[in-house]
Image 1 (tube, helix red, strand yellow):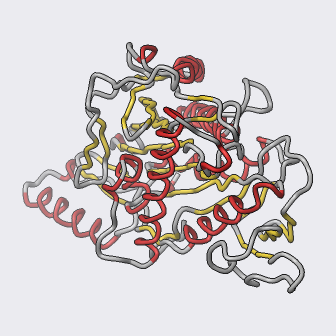
Image 2: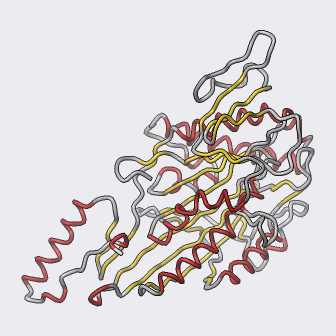
Image 3: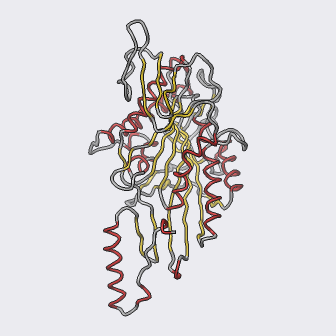
Length: 411
């Protein structure tokens, strides 16, 4: 994120699914630009730069620019290395949100969760490994961290706690039923989000998290459709809260409070291709509606409208602090490079283009010293607070209460 001014919207990093076969509908122009060809005429607005090309006898060509484009040959480690700095900033007291968007079967779950515990591990397990490694390193500098994790899914506009004791009773799309709690979403004035009755577990090691995620994965809703043999039928949200404490220099205690949201969205589907009926049809309609609401929110942010329709879906309301608050947010845009998916790929790329036009508020990492709560990014307010506290200490004749002011970057 920039050091001043509004931060850009969710930063799209384009990635391709593994195991895709020819004929391809994509051409990589460079590490940040992509051309899509083979899509039918009249599918949306023109491309990011270069617009729509083609000839009277050939299909139009669309060129888009992204922060980074990953090919099927890119490894999971390469993808994660590119975003690891964003993950580390959660330990610095930042709110971080990383999510994957794209059509069903385009590799979102593989990107976020991966496959197994080897080299094909995804963003979520690698992010947690990095967090624990970094927290251990910071112990040598006097820092101690406590971490609490939760994991939920949004299925048919209903929140389900994947860590609840009764999660196994309804955690399959083959046996859908409503959870016992309403799991209402609440935002406070500081931008903190809580979900009523959601199970939050303390984790102290990578093994704790692996056990937690393995349990949650068994309960997530999935089913076979005409487009994907194992299609995620819900949006999955993993949240890690990080509270840090350091005695610092001279005995002055310092605190940080960060949050890491890692989100695997359900994939968009065209009913004409998925062939969904019955319960699968209901799921598809709910998924598409919530993704459409996400698009409406992004559009309102791009146009800087006074009203942003966060409440139109559970997904956008839950993500409100990530999309419109003080958060560092990155979006993976997963696409299928086959010619048969050219239309869906073009729609996804245009959504990514729209996302790049949104502006978020400046992220504020939270650092507190003693009993003073400071937010990076507003130094004039900080010093006003510090001067008042210093004057009170001097007036009282007690220099020991003068606050020590340090940000983590000082170390």
